[in-house]
Image (tube, rainbow, N blue to C red; front, side):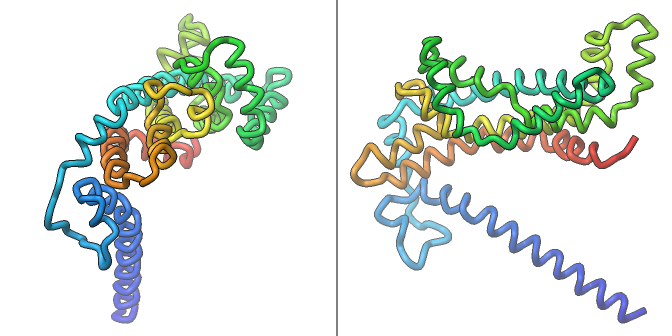
Length: 280
């Protein structure tokens, strides 16, 4: 019995040690960026590094606001992220509901295979042709040019299909007996119950949109329309000396909305991820 308790204690200590090391490795780079935003540029790369800076300075933040229209860039990212997330989640929920509840419809298996196949094609392979169409529509440097080409998301549709398969068919049938159409049943019955799954997909898509660099870099040419990843990338190419302190300040401010989203939606996110593991 004592040997069993000893082994269990060692196992628990090992698990906590791994978690602590993983937490330090995850938080370490973020802390370094945060610290660098309050450190003068000539002291950022001092060795050994100062874990707790002694001489704090706030010079990087005024410089950031003078160098670029940062608040405008953050506003662009918020607008694109919120609209993209809302439309993508709505469309993927409808697609998932259709694939899960009309699986016997002719051609549904082929359509689902096409959705899966779309996930395997790298976006870079058709980005150029997509940009040509965007330019023909005069959507360069516009919000619709950033949002519309990406809202048909195969990954979100696949996730929502898997979540919807666990939704009881009896609830949908009961709403149909009460006189609801499939659309009314979807919006008034299915969506409220599937809120954890929708929250999980929404967080994933918002994070994807917030961090997207490749497509905004192609579509946008005006600095006032840049999203945060593009304006952050422009620092390294527009100046002879890379202003690491200003970049650190920009990254610190850009991280705040993501932290707020994760904190507000973590309960729904965890519930949504575990929902697919429960077989109804």
